[in-house]
Image 1 (cartoon, rainbow, N blue to C red):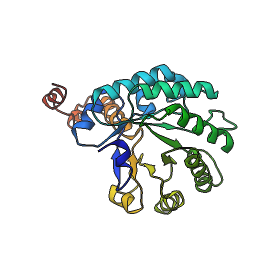
Image 2 (image 1 turned 45 degrees about the vertical axis):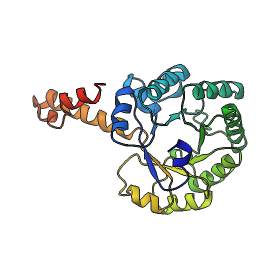
Image 3 (image 1 turned 90 degrees about the horizontal axis):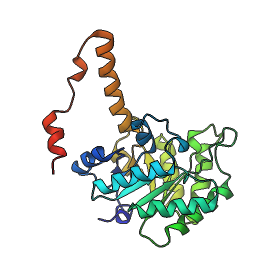
Image 4 (image 1 turned 180 degrees about the vertical axis):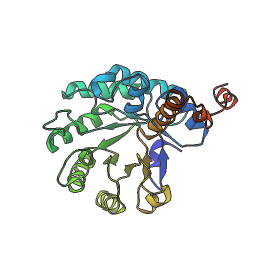
Length: 265
């Protein structure tokens, strides 16, 4: 099934690997598609998750590495396009498409502390530019409204306003990271129908994939969550060695044979 067809009915999970190995492991589990994670790529390199830390060159290398590792469709976490100016945004989107991705996500963040989000007209124009830069390729554009991640007085209402405008500007998939409750998710999906909606599950909120499917969600991503699970296990086991001289934290380690077999062609 193509990436576009996955968004036409039902609900699917698109997990987020951060390197070649994690992409291969997730593909082997039977997921239908994968998405990159800028946070995971940055943390693996000892960097904070900021656009300037990895930069467009580093992001493109990570995206290409994951695309090359698997035969599944891959959606690129492309932050805000790694450029403020529209010409730079278009050029970067074209380079991202050239890696072979099946989709890419574009945020409406501008990075400033006082004005963290682009204004609605600016953000809409950036979606239009990104859509035009895809230039007819079969690559889905996901537009993200980041209102829930900042101190916005009405994140749901603002997200709906922005995402409706992004849809009219050419976005194929709509995404408001940070929406968490059944009520908000349902309201978001209902307001944006028939466009497919991606929901981020970055922690255990008690909702399941079936719950999200019943709410009308088409796509579920986990962002940096799997990265943080891996880092959490690593840090916990290492701290027990340092603090207690105990190796009990190694009990849940994957076996050498399992990992070696996974990566043996």
